[in-house]
Image (tube, one colour):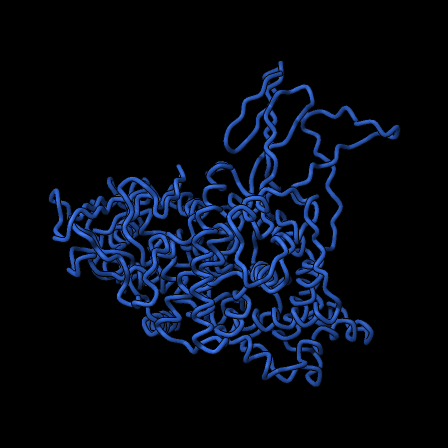
Length: 631
């Protein structure tokens, strides 16, 4: 028998080559590409649940036999408890990134401490300065309070104190009164959400205590390992109700009662959700991420909350094995209930304040309209404005069934009003690519982007709402514009777009690109919609400021690309060197050699970023989309 290994699978080739066994090696990042993106825009009448496949299995290279000499890759976790994938990045890449990002986070934490001291120890009111600080990242020890305050969750809790406690007791009371899922829809939702509890972050040791541990081999009655054929499955590990899973259930059950009318109207809570939901898949991931932020994190070294994690400590904690971590929360029941209550109202704020109405409703109309705004209006009508004009033309050509050749050979239709849905998506009238981005919005990029990048997106999302999701999506399309244009059909593009977010490991760089203004670096309005390709090469003679117009003079210290100096050509910003980082090309070819500010070598400076996507613009396009749906 011999072994053949690849980056994504380990294949055993026996003497009889007719038998092959593949062990799928996937991780949080690779699962992010697949599960959420397979979401379908339909909810069954009986379960009222968004259909999606179960999550893939955990990831790590495993020892198949003591007789083999195959290398064993020990699991590596990040500070949030997730197993890391080695599909795109090596262990050395992660260690380098941890060191780079930890130093950057230390600088940002110091700036936040100074900001809070200047505001008397309180969070300041919303302002352009605060928005800039949030876009550059909220320190871990402030993230919970910041999200809770600026999302509106804190206000909801203050106005509805005690409501969560009442909702958390409702299930037991209903069952005592003889209610069943046949006469109480909420109990049916509870049955469904319970099946999703252990599908929520199965590779996180806070939600799955056995995540990353070797799987048990079936044994016979004598206690010896059975001589099973290679295709025999390993015995499943028993499910363990971790504190996070228990709290996740409590929050989702309370939300089901909050968002669905009770059959006995007198038992409805004094405040109810703005539209009926009950339960919808994706909510388990949204609530799960909130719990990761709001609950103490045993994966982090125990230290004063005001002290950011050092690079050395961060690196050690990232590679810790599950057995080396005490996963107990060390909280009593009352403390857990207080945190659950905050997490519950944070979930309510996300659903009612930050996301559009009907995002999780029975018809998923809010999710569909959001995709119409994205693909038909922002991309289709305003693609050039946001620097994704070539992608817009490519999508339009594919919708018309034309052969793109290089992706832009056919003239794009100037009028889309006769086919406002975008075409190409069957009876739904939506382009096929919207099936991928729908899950991006419904999960708010959870299980789509790497976890640290998700947290950075959420920093801005909890402050500014849905428009951040639009802007991040446009940025991902802009970064990978050349790759999309190289696709021969929408199927290739669909696969590509499913994969690209999992490679966005450098959260700071991605957010820097996302919030760059839509102007030339030298202030010239510049060329057309497609000039800002990720592969564009810039050579600028002179010292060029790369800070956006919103930056102030009190936050000018180098933080990678956000407000920092341009990096040397061919090198990632901030001294970070990751071989497969797709963001290296961005901003890596600007060099300063004087003060003339002229373009050398005849190169044209493209526009930067995708520019601002305003709430007013989204509301306007949503109104148009809803109006056309009525026709």
